[in-house]
Image 1 (cartoon, one colour):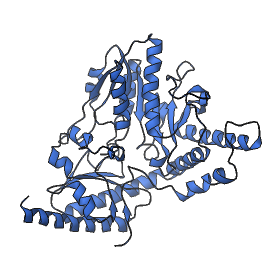
Image 2 (cartoon, helix red, strand yellow):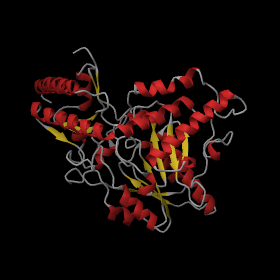
Image 3 (cartoon, rainbow, N blue to C red):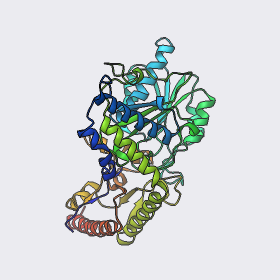
Image 4 (cartoon, rainbow, N blue to C red):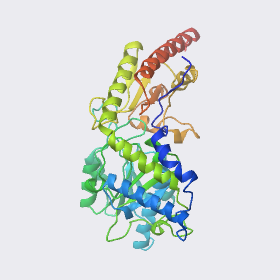
Length: 403
């Protein structure tokens, strides 16, 4: 098979041609700076941002002045966590507090928390249910409640996990946080555009996501900051112009913002049918792998409950095979990953799979499949065939070398 198959949509997605079409005028004809409103070029750009903001806020169930545009979810997470911590210390006269998060969070949450810990913040990471549990990857609400203290000022819980697709019970978590007057942040990079999300109804205070996870452009993201007594509960971390109500300085990425809004519109319009299609394709892939390859084991929550797991996510072990070797053995025909793309610069065994209780051999034999809008049934069938042949070849080589 000469054509390459892309199954790494949890890492990034192809930009939808309809999104590109919406962006093009703001790369060529309407190229003004949205901050330069003294001439038509700037006002055209500013009006485009205003329309996009109205679309995004409407789809999320929040106010337009609660949207802050960033370069992506990593920046949004940093602004949420570092900004909320700074806001807290200013109100408490430099007194560091306590933050609760989850052991399976993305590095874009765990690393800022590690930096805050250096400054005296106490950080508690709640464990998740192990692989043997029907709730594999989920946190226990009772365990989260037990981790809270009088000085807890922020809880951060990823809505949908980037490696195993598990969906956390955010509505329950939000209710708990509200009852204790604690801010709740969620990294929703894998969730926006892939599942229904009404932020106001859920009661989440801070929400981070990126355009490139939902068939929009790279380099643009959002932090939703629900206002409390008229103010956003964060302090700015970038300075130089007091853009976006002083919360995030910098020239706005007008084409990216327009593209993000269009991507969210399309995702919302096609959500139901696309979720069903991906669920069917994902189950076809897993069933085919199990049928053709001995020793294929699911990582993460069950596939049958859409409230537990993202439809496009599959993470499996290929027992007695090294996952990295399996990826290489396809000759580049199938794009897969062993975990988060953001840890590729410093490869290490997946902390998410380790948190499920998997041993080193199981973690090393695991691969993530990310199905998306442009994945076809023929690609799924071809992937099953390619991997079956590759696993057979690798196991034969291992047998010959006595490993």
